[in-house]
Length: 530
Image (cartoon, rainbow, N blue to C red; front, side):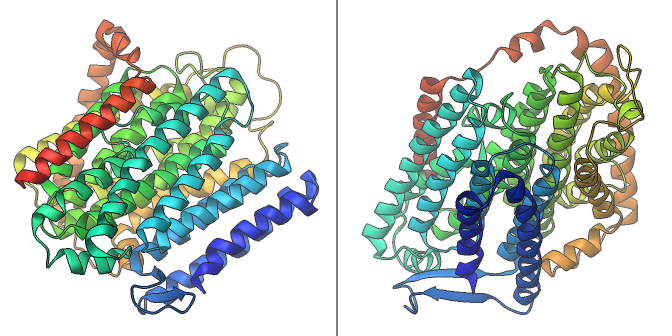
């Protein structure tokens, strides 16, 4: 059963490319994607009753390749199918070729495969093919900037996965297996010395896929490149970046003798802080969103690494929430950029007046990402902070303050009057499909907050309690942060020369390769002393 979730998506992509016309491809794509989403939802409900296991080739145990749909992986499979369906609806009226739809369905199949497989080498193959597919999508319009960004992403991704591959080879040499669970069982009986090198190699590749500092320079180029279709940017930030986080969740515990939670906690916090500082310095709305993906991934990794059950579930739920509000923001940014002909946050005004539904969805997503009370981000951030020490809580509050400041800047595009004459009725020029796709995601940002506990129980079969006094305290902190963030934005951020200099920071290919080597060295050193 499980292989079909990968194979069918790829077959649909091939069918659309070979047998359909460009006009028919988009209609078939939407229908096919709706069917795939339905089956992904069915898989999710089946997995709630117990893990679904498929041994490819009927090789039982650890000799063959095993696909497993458990509570967590089935959630991410369903989320993947849903977001690709939203992207198909969003792109329905756009003039995309058959190649675009082929690449999108192949990409979806690869992502689903990453979430289902437990084979270390399969993960490498799927990630490598996905890297090539994404590079082509980034370079889809073939202008100079997108070609550079696409090649940068391709080369850095390939080099990072070579670290991962060498680590897989070492794991196979030591354990004789490629299955994650089997390797974990064998490593539990082996000395720590046998785990240090493969841990450092594999975590270096995974850290780049997560965009952990200092291995994040590829992300703003891939997610924020001017020519990439908005749906591609939304899916990169909404779901594909979670593949790296998912690999971290699955593979890190495999090394039984190395407790790296403190290591990734530190890097998660540093990444979260660096991400919002770089986002605050930007004036390009897509780069603001891209750098905030760096910051939010840092927050997710922090939640997964704190060590408390509430924080771990909060980190998982925030990964789902981030997929919703960041996809909303990138898709709405695509509408805004096309309508205004600019990406500068200072040159765009009056989105609410011009596109009311897009404006409503955007404000819901902004409230979600900033953790406003009753929004989805508020619930996940509350659980991430639940039971943490005062200094970690202070750093998490600082992260959220930076997010608030950045989106005070970003939200300026919503208000005021559009410059020049705007003809037609409000919303005119934006297809119903685009507005529906954006509004559905924005509405989920709201529902994910109002019914946050219920959603967590539904998704992860874990019932968490919200302390009313604690939530009120968090809401008071948000209000104080909002007021303080506005003052900081008005009297410092808008005039800061330092932030303008920070905006110029851009790690090239050589610096990224050096950073990979540096991260590997640090991981090797830390693993030796953990």
